[in-house]
Length: 303
Image (cartoon, rainbow, N blue to C red; front, side):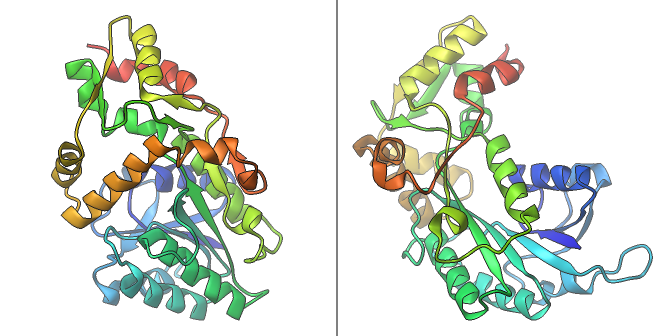
């Protein structure tokens, strides 16, 4: 059976594909152009959330032996935007018609099933589909907190060239989660052989947190120690934060919503995921701490 990975060569998608390959499982990527998909190691088909005519490509793909390999599971990386449902739901419906048994969705720790936010809405739709097809279709929505790996992406040039981390968060404490741990959780969800009850949040909607609850000041100190030069944490305004996200190509409304979620960290939105007992049953703690991640990757920021 095959796992179809949407979102092209995303960090988690590529890591998931490598784990599946190691487990001798078939993988097929969906990508607009096929760029960055591990040097041709994996097969891909044209797939674009903005072009519904590409949705069936995965299910019509023929392997080298000219046999269509059934797609049993789908990794869903929703498109950017405040309302992805008009794009995602037709694909989910088609996938179910074609025999897909399990969906694994990347969501956010603050996104609640059926919520108005983009990830929560997709989560809610998958819950509806799973209930209507109970026993035939299930899903896991991996509700991850903020990524440790952003230090090597969004903060990369800040650290390497300007010796700083830039955020609007003076004191917020965050249980950063490494992509490695999210990838492992996605793999575990796909290969799990039992039935996942859509009404069991611990199974179908786990919250993924890292082993450390720390502030950005503490992250800066970890980088300072590992790199052997001072790294400071510079505080910026909400407007400056929005400008950074729009410079990445995000629509302004999406950038503003993302920054507002980020600012909620200052009020403990992520901290409570670790400290409040109400999350004990759904919390899943990763293995890779910030210090371990920085030590392993410190060559990235060496001048």
